[in-house]
Amino acid sequence: MILLEAHALACRFGARSAVQKLDLTLSEGELVGLIGPDGAGKTTTFRMLAGLQRPSSGELKRHLGRVGISYVPQAFSLAPDLTVEENLRLQAGLYGLKGADARITMLLESVDLASFRDRLSGALSGGMKQKLSLCSALLPEPRLLLLDEPTTGVDPVSRREFWELLHGVHDQGVAILFSTPYMDEAEYAHRMLLMHEGRVLESGDLATFRRSLPGLVFRLVSPDRRQVQKALAAFGPLDLFAEGEIIRARFSDQESAPLLARLRAIPGVEQVRLAEASVEDVFLHALAGVGGEHG
Image (cartoon, rainbow, N blue to C red):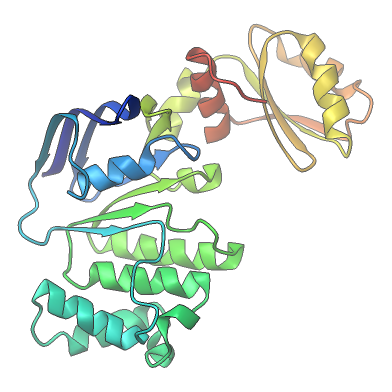
């Protein structure tokens, strides 16, 4: 069953277009990721879908009932001077929920916050604040959960714990649309929309992206990453994604064996192997198609 439909949705602030001609359909049980860097238009998209921002043009239909959608913004939005339990009781009252004590206790126990119910919310760690925000969003038992960059600024361990919680929520039948700038998190999605400067560049699942991506992807390891990147420029047009000592390079129209030998001969390269295409590779290829800058 379709929960939400957006057709040619757009939002402008003066002369600036934050979102352009967005088409999106969300159905029951889906786990969908909106992937892109800061400024891509992700937050504006979420605000329109949640009814907090009026679209400049386009059509938006929600088939969710009175409390069928919950939205968790990127910034912590609960009262910092109320305790964990007080915040949830306040939210229950705003939703008009009667006898919410048992559900509050169940939610707090499910995210390991039951022992912190009397702690001021402003004194929680970043990961605990996100867990509390998730509890608040789940109070009215929504059918669709919107999560705007839910793990930004959260430490790696808390990020992993939070995603374990989200998988559990999804397993209970709640559809989830999340946004993230982290490409490793993007792979949790069953379906992805790659967004840049207000436009969706590509949409689909990772398997489809990998089949359609031309060329070969290699993973190189070097302590002198910048020098190796300069050497790779002589190989002709390619997409590069670099982090730490790792370089991922996608080459088109070249044979694997000779290319592998040339890459191994680059001074400073300690390891090199053929790799499976990642979301980064797909995003860089889509970005190159619209003239985006990367490196």
